[in-house]
Length: 78
Image 1: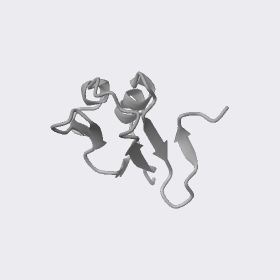
Image 2 (image 1 turned 90 degrees about the horizontal axis):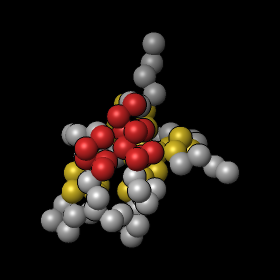
Image 3 (image 1 turned 60 degrees about the horizontal axis):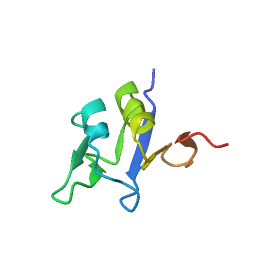
Image 4 (image 1 turned 90 degrees about the vertical axis):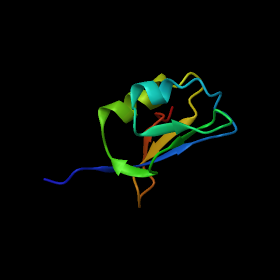
């Protein structure tokens, strides 16, 4: 069984530093001194906590894609 990997990005121009991502997925996100979020590691194993963090971001600053193909996991395309 293979575990899916995700590429996680935070759009720092959109991030408002709410910290919701850190609350939903501690260890996967961190806030810097300017209260801007960033992933602890841009590539990680797919997991529900990171998806919950992306879904819970009040400004949808978190994007999740599949490495290699770039297929969008979140946010859903309209």
